[in-house]
Image 1 (spheres, rainbow, N blue to C red):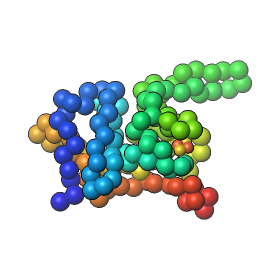
Image 2 (cartoon, helix red, strand yellow; image 1 turned 135 degrees about the vertical axis):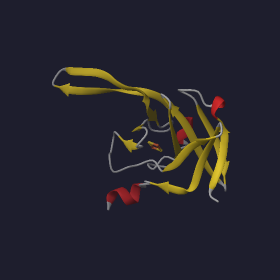
Image 3 (cartoon, rainbow, N blue to C red; image 1 turned 90 degrees about the vertical axis):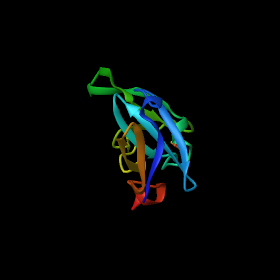
Length: 130
Ligand code: FES
């Protein structure tokens, strides 16, 4: 069995996060507007603790001289170098080949469960260059 209880659903309201250590891997579960997203607490750029990052939005451009705020509450900004990753997919906005490692997460009987064997999507600096 690779699913682990992370917390009760009531402890993870929209906009919040919970970080746990499971089998010596730190995993953060975020509630993004009601959707749960689990990521490894490691930035693929240089290893920063991603779950310490600001959950925010970002500025996008629709054309010359056109900027607007978008993805409010869906962007996780790395605490070390500020790279932004869009949740739930975990793709870097700075350099799209970089991905956060994500895990399957679900709710059962009021508990948030993460499948620790389902980690996928990690693209490290070296992997992104290949
Ligand atoms: S360690 Fe995250 S952007 Fe550099």
